[in-house]
Length: 249
Picture (spheres, rainbow, N blue to C red):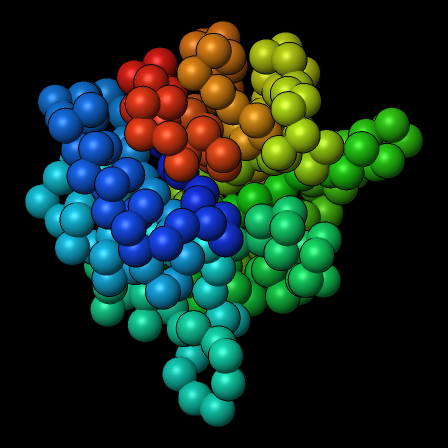
């Protein structure tokens, strides 16, 4: 049976004081919560603070990106081994903002995915289409391409040790949200595409939805059969809101 995962993505937000307030508020709000996994993905400079605050709680943590290379002469990069030093369980790979703004290609995302898994991290592999791609009827084609790059570089078996986050780019930070039925259709497509290669992996694959998830719409989204939690942006910066989403899951 799949266990839902709600992961907060702070993006490039936060400071030491604000983080401390948020991190102090979350454990009591989520204490005793069962049947759902919760995590925070924070910017690199705050991973030590997050580790210190969340160690011993039922909230895991991770990073928002990882270098595709191991330790070495890669100025500005942060390796998977470094993330492991801070107790990270998860790392976001291929977030739409990395793909669109920073120009990360499918092959680069595939290399990052492999580097994360090799070090023992669980990648949260982000896939999704832009508004133009959706309006052109290319949603499934785009997501298939993004998935195939990772499967081709690693294997379908590697997906047994990952989480996939479907994030329609047009719904991230815009206030627009795919309806539960729209999101479910894409999640079902992802699971079916994996099932063609390995039915067991597909059945156990946790597929999150990311795109303006709030406490007010979380329950209707998470009630869909193939939506296994959420990758939460802005709402993850508000303790009560994030906790409510976790409880909805």
